[in-house]
Length: 279
Image (cartoon, rainbow, N blue to C red):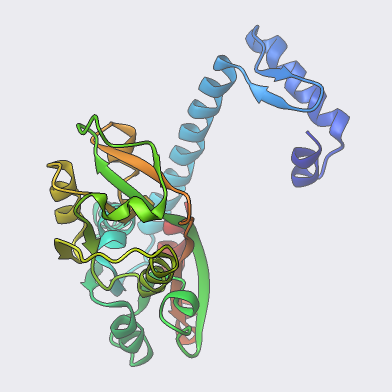
């Protein structure tokens, strides 16, 4: 309650009172109030879920209207990794195309370092990548940097594999064939290599690809397991097609960011695109 009050610039009693008034209006308890901890009831979780949908729809409506604006036009060239383009950028491009026939979109896949070079040379207008300072050794020159989301690397196996454990130590990683995402996240690859060496593990992948869709399908067949970025597999994990396995020594998180040249700082098209991505 205190944290919520600080974020809303209200007092803690004012927030508590608003929650009580909402509970009275709906006629159910939304929170279970303990001595040290407050957690939502089943009804509270359901209301939160619907509230998120309502807010997302409101944001989408605003963005769709802005996308139709006369100033949102011309070419927009975006460079990114396969996993990011498929799951984060594709839906935003679809919204642009439905709302505005004056904009021309181009999505370019490539390796992170190469895309940063293309951004600096003006061959792409935006680059959406893992934080380049951590993954590729440095941010591009003369660019603004916008954090979009946080993602993790998850070890996943086929959801149909009843023998797949819930948790392992890294020394057990070689007990099954390894499916590997190739050269997309070098910072993670370096981190994993160091941890495997520290654990005395040596193993080569049986299959590699930079295409996350292909990797997911291979893992779903039960051939082996592998690390994939969480933003690209959350749906498959939630529906049970893939199973997440916790690895004691590996807890790797990274920011997904958008880089925009400072020369495009006042461009309406990239402004609307960035806002859509952040939502």
